[in-house]
Length: 220
Image 1 (cartoon, rainbow, N blue to C red):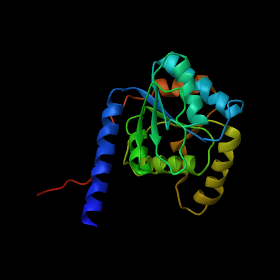
Image 2 (image 1 turned 60 degrees about the vertical axis):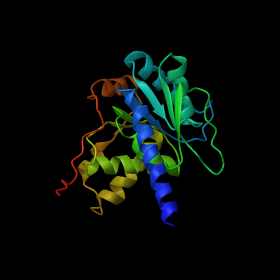
Image 3 (image 1 turned 135 degrees about the vertical axis):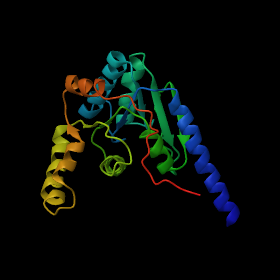
């Protein structure tokens, strides 16, 4: 059992080190999240592709995704076809998730949590399109990190108002009314479909290095 635990810790450490080294080469980036089941004729896919193209072409930012199909493919495709840096942090699954063909480079992970840390480590903005459980998991993790000041305030842009307005209504009707979150916490994200406005939000967001940490001071 000790050997198994040691091997697991070694793999986790390696994934973090490899991930941080990979990210280091792309100092300005935007990370896209969204459902893996959307096909190229879906309006959300089309939106992600168009927005990613503008981020890569107009701003010169790298685009990160989970490297799979659906919204991930759309975002990578927009960046790739515009000549930008299109990057993927992929995950190993029991039922293999296909890596999309629009990646300049990608890095594979075994653990979801180490992959999520790397996907949120130093992006200048997070863009969420509609998705399922995985997208919701990523959304709640990042917004919790911002809410609790574990990472600095970073724009969380929710694209697809027909979807996200319903989520926002749930938060207001249930979370805020029951005092489980403060009303101000709902200002941690922005629901926006305008590409021009999204580009301006990203352009005005400070460049991060991901190293800010306000944790406990350990004394010997």
